[in-house]
Image 1 (tube, rainbow, N blue to C red):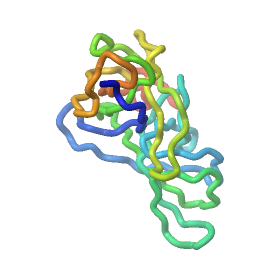
Image 2 (image 1 turned 60 degrees about the vertical axis):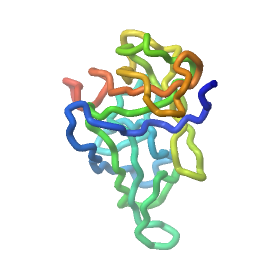
Image 3 (image 1 turned 90 degrees about the horizontal axis):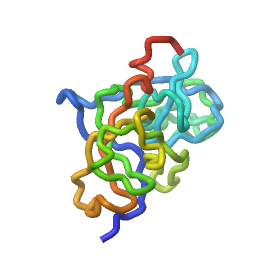
Image 4 (image 1 turned 30 degrees about the horizontal axis):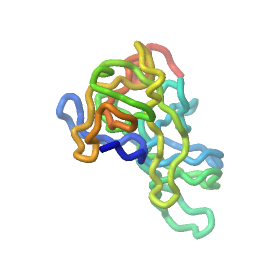
Length: 187
């Protein structure tokens, strides 16, 4: 049976060392103009903030929601999604930024176990407004020796039943040199 084409972004599943999976707090600039969905890759920007990452960017981590004072209601608000152009000076994002965290993510093409330890870039910046989840995937066509993420296995999820066809789910970690915390230079 074919895998479901239902991208869900990057979901943390475990830590390579067996440690705890935690988020760190980062600022999002007041009125930043791009939506960021839960499970979406983000990059570090000057002054300690984050923005949505695109294919080829050095990745800081994976967005896991944010907290801010709603500019309309003046109430403290937690959201899975950062709403674009939010006029709030206190926006704090929660980001899975540890390069040892293993994430589950869907391939946009046919990803197999033969691709383990290959590098991939991400593809997509959209998400679903109903759940606030990202729809980012691995760009299967970028399989090679470099890329933002390294596949370390195929998901054991029961719904991932056909690992020889499109949309298989894989386990990935940040690729060394493609993660902010493994760079030897500053941003």
